[in-house]
Length: 352
Image 1 (tube, helix red, strand yellow):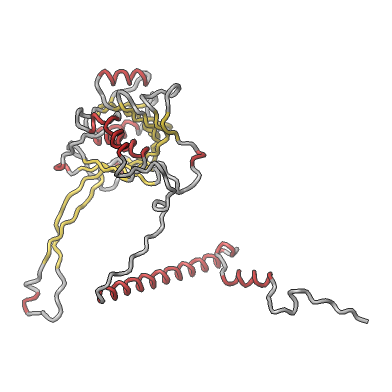
Image 2 (cartoon, rainbow, N blue to C red):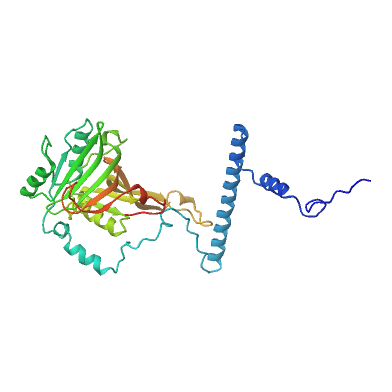
C-alpha cells in the first residue's frame, strides 16, 4: 500500500512560499547594481533616472498650479517644502551662539582682538615662511600682501619662530602669519595673534594663484570689505574674530573690493572679488488689446540695476587643525581645541 505524504504548511495553502515572495519583490524593484551585464545595467539606470525626472516635473507643475489657484481665490498659497541638506540636518550643538547670549558679548569686550576691532589700534601684519621655502610660496605670499592691507614680508632665514615672535612684539605687529610649504607647495597657515595669542593652525589646500584664474582682475590698494559667513559656534565665532583682526575695520567702498571667508562643513573657502554696478534696459511686456501703430516707437523700457563680479585671486581652502592659547608653543602650550580623527563620527557633526 502506498503511504500518503503529508502536505507541508506551504503546500496546497493560499499563502505563497517565502522564496516566491522574495522573487516577486526582486522582480518589482530590480536595482541597477544587481545587474551584472554592463549595457543592461546602464539602460536600467537611464530608465530609472528618466522616470524620476518626469515624476519631479509633474510635482513641480502640480505645485505651481496649486499656488496659482490659491492666488486667484485670494488665499495664501501652500508653504513650499524645504529640502533636507547636510547643513540644515546637522547635529544639535550646545555651543551655537545665540543673539541674546550676554556672556558672549562680555567675552568679546575682553578678548585678545578687542583693541583692533574697537579701532583702538590699526592691524599690522608680519608674513614669513617656514625655513625651507618653495617655488610657489613667494608667489602666494605676494598675492597675500595685495589682499591684506598693512602687511609686510620678512625672510625667515634660520631664525627660530619664538625669536621672530619676540621681534614682532617689539615692532608692535598685531598678527603673524607663517606660510608652511611641503614638496614645493604651500600646505598650511599658522596665524598668531600678538602679543598674547591665540595661535590657529590651518591646513591649506586647493590653492589657485591669480595667474591661473580665467579672466581675473587686478586688485587696487583700497582697503577691502570683509564678509564672514556661517561661523555659528563659539569656536567658529573666535576663529571669525581672529580673521577679522587681520583687516582694517574701515573699508573703502570706492575700491569695490570684497574679501570673503565662507565656512561650509568646517571648510573655510577664501575668495577675493571686485564688483561693479551696472544698469540694463529691458523692454516691458505689451498689454493685450492696447496695440497702436506707434507702439514700436513708444516701447517702454525699464532700467534695472545689477552687479557683476570679477575674481582677483588667490583662491584657497582652509581647514582648522588646532587652536592654542597664547603664542606658538608646541611643547608646553595649552590647546583650546584640537581636531582628532575619532571626532569625525558623523557627516552631520560640525565644529565651526
